[in-house]
Image 1 (cartoon, rainbow, N blue to C red):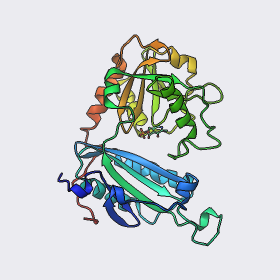
Image 2 (image 1 turned 135 degrees about the horizontal axis):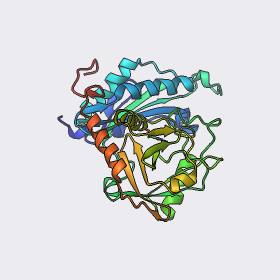
Image 3 (image 1 turned 90 degrees about the horizontal axis):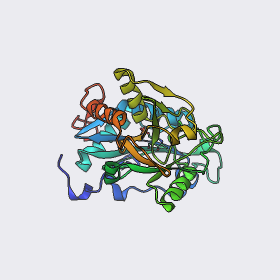
Length: 306
Ligand code: PLP
């Protein structure tokens, strides 16, 4: 891909126009800003290919529907806008975001959400890792935070959203105590997720990942698919904090980082290593999925926005 200096930090789409990412701005009166009233999704491009783009678009649409946000662009429009952003940015590895914001009321002084003009912002920027690559290399250290995850009934975690105050508190606690990141539990002491990732525990050769209190991540889905294909036992459901703390292996997973092994939970080192043998198997299979035509969309496809 060729990249012009103008777009070297990335390309964005906002208000129906493409621009260098630094020029993309939203109003301080946008409810996406004043109330975190927005939904979003993030898909990655690796070696010039989107991974599971249609799954991300489907989840984005579902998130919008759940929050009663409707943007003018169709699904096909959004897809082509994302492709165009990556093309303009000239990136072969990219973090690509789509955000649907509530916007501003079109009736002066209105407090009714339905009066707002919902709108799409999208951007493609150079690849980001939720856990830095060098930390992934040695295995991350994980704190099980005492800060509770917000209840599913209050903020639906399956809608990808920016209401991150609990996750951010967990992250502050973790970093203050010298850990790389944190995972939060719900009021029942069941593990949920962390700031930007799902979690799997390997217990007795099988995998367990939480079902409640978390986003149903696309990477999590890939891991579940890998287990089904390879005959690895995998259960979605309650994961008590104590089971995580005594697990044989633990890994985090997300679009922006893939499968990320944990080397230590609290004060306990994972004896199997980071990655341990089961995690290694999942990592290899996840990498191989990126070569499978069933999951990839090439970024050089023509768009109506060229
Ligand atoms: N959980 C949260 C809170 C996230 O923000 C993310 C991704 O950003 C994930 C889980 C992982 O989801 P995915 O695998 O779809 O990237």
